[in-house]
Length: 143
Ligand SMILES: Nc1ncnc2c1ncn2[C@@H]1O[C@H](COP(=O)(O)OP(=O)(O)OP(=O)(O)O)[C@@H](O)[C@H]1O
Ligand SMILES: [Mg+2]
Image 1 (cartoon, rainbow, N blue to C red):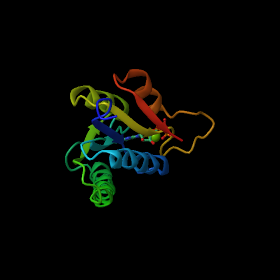
Image 2 (image 1 turned 90 degrees about the vertical axis):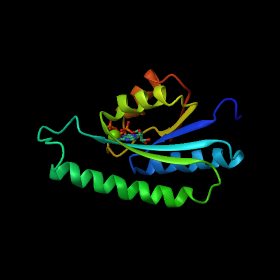
Image 3 (image 1 turned 135 degrees about the vertical axis):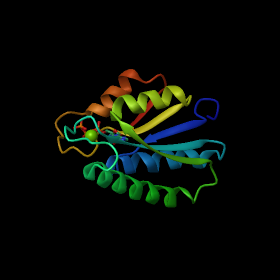
Image 4 (image 1 turned 120 degrees about the vertical axis):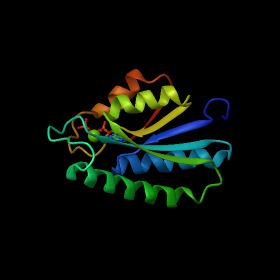
């Protein structure tokens, strides 16, 4: 087990399925305390035409919300003896996740099939679809 997935990443958007993905990753981590858990949230700045960088009220609100959600995650993960890290990134969520995975030598991604968007007809959301296609490591899709 450990040789296959020492470093596990959960891309986290605070959706119900990303919470479920986190639970699944915690379950895996409980199998061996040498498994490291990384939780990453990407603030999507690509869709905003009014993006002003530092001082932008929309960005500030998104950052605040994401920080609060990651604090909750950290509280939850404290129960584990494993090494835990949370990251807050800015950019395009799909490509940021794939770049992170490549740079950090991640062994396994655990993520939701869908996220915050309400569209249920399609099985995979755009972020999970992109990550499954482009990531260099296995992806565990929670549904
Ligand atoms: N901004 C993000 N940061 C980190 N992880 C994310 C982010 N957005 C989505 N994810 C991860 O991807 C999973 C699937 O979400 P995705 O965004 O692909 O679906 P969706 O929101 O239903 O559809 P779409 O965003 O394409 O309209 C989530 O459960 C979560 O694990
Ligand atoms: Mg989404």
